[in-house]
Amino acid sequence: METKTYKKRQNLFKTDGWKRFKKNKLALIGAVVILVMVLAAVFAPVIVRNDPYVSLKEGSTVLKDLTPAESGTILGTDNLGRDEFSRLIYAARVSMSVGLVAVGISTVIGVLLGAISGYFGGVADIIIMRCVDVVNCFPVLFLIIIIATILKPSIYNVMIIIGLCNWTGTARLVRGEILRVREMEYVQAAVSLGANDFRIIFSHVIPNVMAPIIVEATMQMARAILTEASLSYLGCGVQLPTASWGNMLMEANNLATLTKRPWQWVPAGACIFLAVLSINFIGDGLRDAFDAKQKK
Amino acid sequence: MGKYIRKRLLQAIPVVFGITILTFFIMKLAPGGPLTGMISPRTSSESLQRAREALGLNKPIIVQYGNWLKELVQGNFGYSTYNGQEVLAQILERLPATLLLTVTAFVFSFVVGIPLGVYSATHKYSRSDYGLTIFSFIGISVPSFFFGMGLIYVFALKLKWFPTSGFGSSNFRGEGLALFLHKLRYLVMPALVMSLSNIATVMRFARSSMIETLNQDYVRTARAKGLSEKAVIYKHALKNSMIPVITIFGQSIPNLFGGAYITEKVFGWPGMGLLGVEAIANRDYQILMGLTLFTAVLVLLGNLLADIMYSFVDPRIRY
Image 1 (cartoon, rainbow over the protein chains, first blue to last red):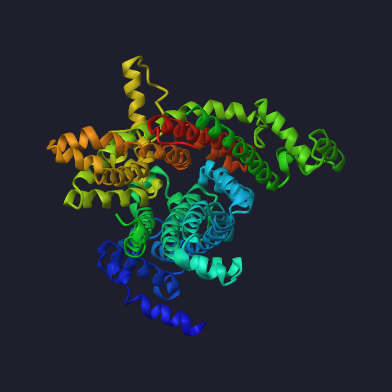
Image 2 (cartoon, rainbow over the protein chains, first blue to last red):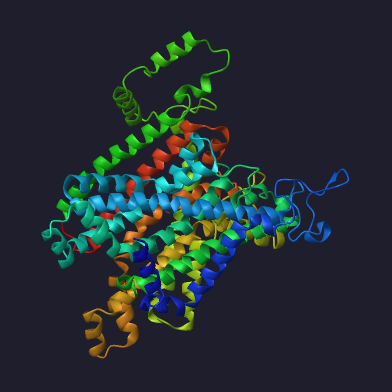
C-alpha cells in the first residue's frame, strides 16, 4: 500500500494533466494564495503579536476603534480594542477547517450514495435520486439556517451541517460517471473474474472517476467557505468571541463602522473573497487539466 | 407532450412528501417542540402534560405527522413560538416584497447574463472573453454581504445616489410615477447584489451552450451557404443555444431565495428573508420552518414550470 501511493504521487508531477495545470496562470496564483492562507492559519500563534481575544489597553483605557497608525498594529483595533490583524489570521483557521471538513463529509456521502445509486440501479437508484430532488428543492442556506438555529451553533455543528446539506451535486456526478464506466471492458473483466461489488466499485470504478470528484470537491470547498461566512454573518454560524471572517463583518455591519472604520470590515470581506476566488480558480484549472471530458 | 407533463407531475408527488417529511423531522429536533414559546419556569408538569395531549404530542410519530400534514393542507403552518401569531399570515405579509426583489433580480440576471455570454462565445479566446470569464469568477466568489456593504459605502454613503436601506421613506408623499421612482431607488442596489452571482452563472452557461451550438453541423451548413456571420449567429445559432439556458431558470430559483436572507439583512428589505433573520435572533423555529417549507414548495413549482417550458421549446424531449 505504501509503495503504491508513493508511485502514484511521483507520477502525478509527470502527467500531462499536471503540465496543463502549471500553464494555467490563474490556477497557479490561486494555489499560491491558498497556500499562504493555509500556512497563516497553521502558524497563526507564531505570526500574530497580540492575542486575538484580549483587548489592548494603555493603562486603564481600552484602545478601541483605533486606526492602524494610532494603535501601532497592522490593521488597527476593533470595537472592543482587539487586534484586527490577529483576529483575521485566527479566522483563517476557522474558514479553512470548516471548508475542509464540510467538503470531506459531503464528498464521502455523495460518493457512497452516488455509487450505490449508479451501480445497483433499480429501487435504490429511484429512492436516492428522489432524495436528491427533495434536498435540491430547499435553498441550501434555508436548510442550513434552520438546522443551525435548532442545534447549538458551534464551529463543529457548522461543519457537519454544511457537509450534510451539500452532497447532492457529488451524488449526481458519481452516479452519472458510474453509469458510464459500468459498461466498460475493464469493469466487465473484473466482473467475469468474480470480483465482488464492493471491490469493483472501490478499486475499479471510483479511481477512474476520481478527476471529476476532485474538481467538484474543490468547487464545493469554495461554496462551503462562502456558506460558513454567510451563516456567521447572519449570526447562526461560528459564535463570538471566536473570530470568523463572516462574524467580523457582522460586527461591523452598522452605518457608523461602514463609513468611519473601513479597517474593521474591508480586510475580512477581502479575505473571504480572495479565498473563494482562489479556490474557484484552482477548481477550474484542475477541471481543464485532469477532466478531459469537460474541457471546452 | 401531455404524457411528459403528466409524468413530470407524478414525479413531483413523492418530492412534495419528501419535503414535508424532512421539514417535519427537522422540526422534531427543536428543543421543546411547538410548546417552547408557552413554557415558563412556573408551568407545572401537569399543565404541560395537558398541553402536550391537546396538541397530540403523546401520539405515535406517524399520527403526529399525519395530523400536521392535514393542518398544513388547510393552510395552518402553526404559530410563531415568539409572538404567537399565525406563521402563514406573517409569511404572506412579507411575500410581495421578496417576490418583487427576486423577480427583478431574476429578470436582470438573464437580461444581462445572456448577451454577455453570447458575446463571450462569439469572441472566444479574445481579450474581452478572458476579461468576462474573470468577471464571472468574481461574480460567483464575492460574498453578497460584502458586495452589498461595499455598494452601500460607495453609492449610498459617499455618493448619496441611493438610500442605504429599507423600501421607501415613510415621509414620502408622492403618487404615481413619483412614487414608483422613489421606490425604484430603494430597489436598485439589493436587486444588483442578489443578481450578481446569477449573472455570472447564466453568462458561463450561455457561453458554453453557444460555443457548442456553433460547432453543430447546421451552423457549418449555414456558413457554407455563404451567410454573413451575423445571420449565422443571430438567426441560426442563438435560438437553439438558448434552449439549455432554460434549465438555469429552475436552478436559479433556490439560489435567489437563499440569497434573500443575506440581501434583505444587508439592506433592511422588509421581506421573507428579514423575517427569517428576526426569527433566527428570536429562536423562532416555527417561522423558520414555515419559511423553509414555503420556499421549498415555491422552488418545486418553479422547477416544474421550467421543465414543462423546456419540453415545449425542445420537442426532442421524450420520456
